[in-house]
Image (cartoon, rainbow, N blue to C red; front, side, top):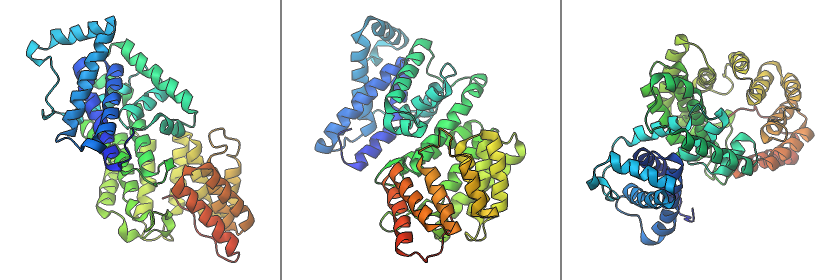
Length: 427
């Protein structure tokens, strides 16, 4: 996008999956529809800052995307055949671009259908998640690559292959039947979790959060929970998002600086979101089977319900991280468990657990490992190592708020060698 107006960028990101859903449903050709939507977004990003917002931005994008879609469909013989199918399916009086003020119906359903379409079982889980992050989450290829810890060129190829697989599958644009949904549900939940994670803590850029992504992830997860109210993991995922997002008002200071969990003003947390999240996970856990999102939600609930950082039930959190590690096998979970170990058994025990992760290829060179090690060295009173690890972590993250926070911790330790260590904690 060429626009520098963040309001227009946020609006385009919000509308993109809705417009894509309309074109994909109408033409039955997801990859070409995605190309048409990208061109419509580019046109909007170029024209709207100069000409002003149209009266109906969504209708404007649909109209431009529809016309570009017709051009693309007529460009090749195979695409002309797809156009003929559309012509036979709809009466002649509907073969025109919709008016800019034409109201869309079931736009949220379209987005959820699009979500399930991108998570087709013909795709590998990694490809399905990457494609959905691009089409539904509005993330750039570079952002998705960072989330997967792979080069941007590799991710671009993965997304391109995924679109080709969907094209060749001939899959209709509709909500899959219950049996089909079950095959795609794990990928759908993972994609929603990754969209939320990028929104809650951006991997790059000047802002700690991307509120639009976090809000969209919660909206889609609510829709998923409404579609499948008996699915305990979807309920757990929604609970996790609500319990995590509830802390957002206290995560940054007046200048946008990052405030760690232990130092946050808990009176600023969203009590209604916490109550809803706790109720969701409380209902979901007994239903079973227990999955990773429910366990993470239970951990988040323990943090949110503690009246202060000192009153946090770290032994229970450590036990839950043990369960979560067995369920997921994730090195990031193992890292968080190491920090919880330090809170229960002391920094030496936590550092020993971190040492066991040093050779993990997914964590090697990642800022989270260095940041956790710095926190534990600070707890142990080893200021020299803490300073070195804080600086190393700052050099390994692309998030400017995280960089500033980590460098501030290092500078404070260097300037005040007699200062006491602070308790680490997730935001």
